[in-house]
Length: 248
Image (cartoon, rainbow, N blue to C red; front, side, top):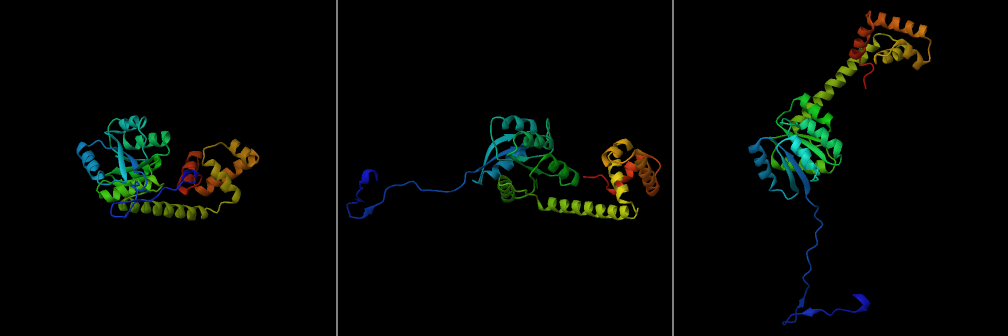
């Protein structure tokens, strides 16, 4: 105590030591602030009822569409957004892009019935941190929200399988393209010219970038056309896409 003063212990009438009523200390983290965007009233209410059983999350905003969600986030901060895809006014993908651009610290997790590759890719490209299916149990949804709040990338099992198939297909196509490209027996310089030609630039630009004469570039281009079996520049650019040349 201050000034060296000692506070004597307090005892009850029976002589037993009485402990002061000190508030219980807790290190429990604050709940994750959650926003929900879902246009279907029944599904929205069902989701909110299920989430209400979990003290780890606190629903701070509920919106019937993407536009209402974005407007609400102007005045209410959220750690994570559970985002439907098909909604009126502003769909989930467009709303995700808006959220990521304006509030980069807010993670967006898609919650939808769609598990096709195109929609998954579109949502992730817009900046979604995760992708869940609506038939997931509440425990899985909450776990995904908590994971996203920590920087994770939660996805449903079916979505993960789709993503794995996509990557495998892309890698298979890439390896096949590289094998076919190797079969063309291009020289190192022809590969450089091919890569630039694939971007659609002219021979003059290629010459400047490779520090070659225009005549030399035209000679390489003619050789490329012969090996590719094409007769026009447009066809050569199309062939470059097939061989994966110039792709990021």
